[in-house]
Structures are given as structure tokens and as C-alpha cells.
Length: 302
Image (cartoon, rainbow, N blue to C red; front, side):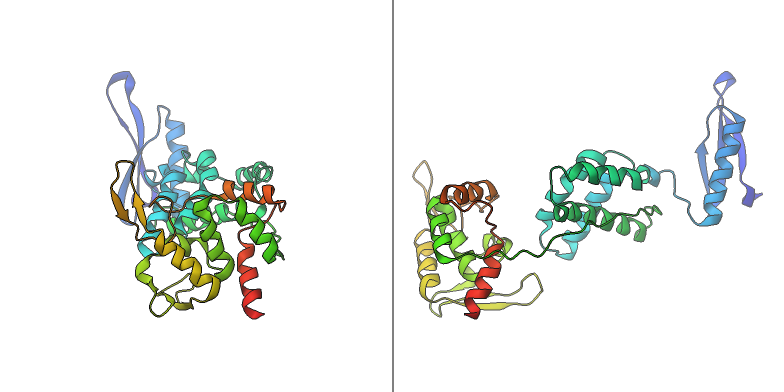
């Protein structure tokens, strides 16, 4: 009977294996069940139980690895035009290193707890949460797409978000003196505007109206555009960047960078090490680039 499935043998002579067959949504599924009839009966019973309880996962889909789920999620975000994907990719690296090659259905709550315990020795709760949040969203997407029925409880750690850091002008000036040349104006722009790093590294000259002394962003993290007037030190900074557009290669060829902020024509990359070193040399260790956002808001209010 279809509802009960069946057990049968395949092969020749002494190398015959037991197989099971059952129906899901009116379609027959077949699966190898080993060399013992008892094992075949046990597996068939388990499959029928999964089907009746709505927890059945196609054995082929059950082989899906954590890396495959995360890759699928990153592609999904890219198709939606999501921002900060590179940051998410970075947060997911520790998860890929530990779980990446394993089947997604084999990851359980205990293993997540052990992961958290180990990561807390090296990272802040907020950093851990960003990675686990990405894993959770990847699992949710897989369920919506019918790839998995796997449900996994992923806790969120308590975060201390009550940061009150600000920069005074003398602190900022001292740190800038210790920065490499390509970061001086970059950090100066962050200090005056409070812009996110992602907005600054992608800022191109076609968005800068020098005649009107304005920068116009068509969109931002919240989806809304905005206009930034250029006055005083900020205008002087933009004029310096305009003069730094020309890039001369080792063979003497000259090109014009479309980026306002660049490093020999290339996008400004990870600058955490350079920033940390500059802060320590200036006598202000532990200062955060993110503090520019609060500082800029305070200075504009003043």
C-alpha cells in the first residue's frame, strides 16, 4: 500500500542491499537502507513518521551543507540589493570555519552553545550576534524555499550598546597626524559628516557638485537620499581630494580616479590596524571610528 511504503532488494548474489520506497506528495521516493532487513524496516518507519508529522526532508536535500546555505543567503541578499554584504561575509567566517562543511541538519543547539563559548574568548557579544544572526536568516530562507525543515534555536547575546564615546577637536587632530596619508582626509570627512564607511569608500566624483558646493547621495542605508553642503574645513578637504585625483603608475602612465577617497586609485580597504596604531601613538588608545557618528551629530547640534 502506498501509505505504508515497501521494502525490497537490489543487487546480485551476496551483495544485495535493501531499499525502501515511500510516497511524498504523490511521488515515489527510493532510498538505500543497508544490508539488514531490520535496518530497512527501521528506516522506513522513521521516514513514514517524518512524512505524517510534516518533518520530512528529502534525503538529497538533507545533504545540504552550512556553506551552501550561507552562499544561497548571500546571493539572495545581493539580488535584493542589500547593503553591507561584505561586513556580513566577514562575520560569517568563523561559522564557516567551524560548521561550513557539515550538513545543516546536524547542527544543534548544544553545538551553537559551544561555538558561543569559544567565540566569547576572542570577540565581543555584538560581533558574535552578527554572525549567528546571518546563520539564522540563512536557515529561515532555506525553510521558505523548501530546502530544509530544520528548526534551530539560536540565542542572542546581551550587547552593551551604551557607548558614549566622542572626539574632542584636539584628540582628533592628534590622531590624524599619526595616520598614513591616504587615511587623513578619509577620517577627516568621517569626523565632519558622521558618514558610514561604506558610503565614503563608494563616494565618486559624479555625486560631488563643486559649483554648488554640495554632495548629493541618491540613497543611503535607510533608503532615503540626502544633500551635504560643503563649507569651511569640509570644502577645503574636498578640494584637496580633487587635486589628488591623478594617479601615476610606476611606468609613468597617468589616470584619473573616479573615487573621492582612494589608495593609489584603489578602494580604501580595512584600515582597523592603521587606525589602532595611530590612536596608540597619539595617546588615545581604544578610540573608535564609529565615535565619529556621535561626534558629528553633537557638533552639528552645537
